[in-house]
Amino acid sequence: MPIRAVVLDIGGVLEVIDDEVFPGDTERRLGLPPGGFSAALAAAAPLAGDPMLGEVTEAGVRRHWRDSLGVDDDEADRMMADFWRWYAGTLDRQLFDWFASQRPERLTGILSNSAPGAREAERHHGFEQVTDDLVYSHEVGLTKPDPRIYTLTARRLGVAPAEIAFLDDVEANVSAARRAGWHAVLHRDTPSSIAALEALIADLG
Image (tube, rainbow, N blue to C red):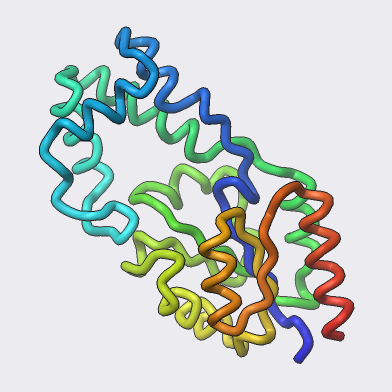
């Protein structure tokens, strides 16, 4: 079967993420040692659900961080701003332009493990303008590598699993996609990923 849809992950793929931004900036501002943010959350009462499954709202995460770190509302707002600045990263323009160029010959989709607020935080990158469907885990209540999210994505795009080329930077997600019948590539760097996807498309006609 020819490739009829190209599906990409976001964080670490379409977005270049700088781990110095978060929680590093928050820890430095609060005078915490490296790892202090995670340690404070680990010592606190756990969240009442998984944000990536949509079980906790963005406001609930903010409240949890505020209470776990013992900070005021202004600082909680700054922490969230740090987080979203890190989360949205910097757009990989080369990969984005290649991805957008697949249309209209092929469908394009995004499949992302995400947190409440992600769609709004990433909107400035223009993902919605270059995709036929955008699947955020927190909106559908499923996360990669759950096989059901691959089935859902293929169904929403209206293609067979074997007609999808997928790019993700997490080995477990790539392996799960292959088990679901997708053609999946592990992202290491942009030039080699584009070359691998183009080779897949060419080989499968």
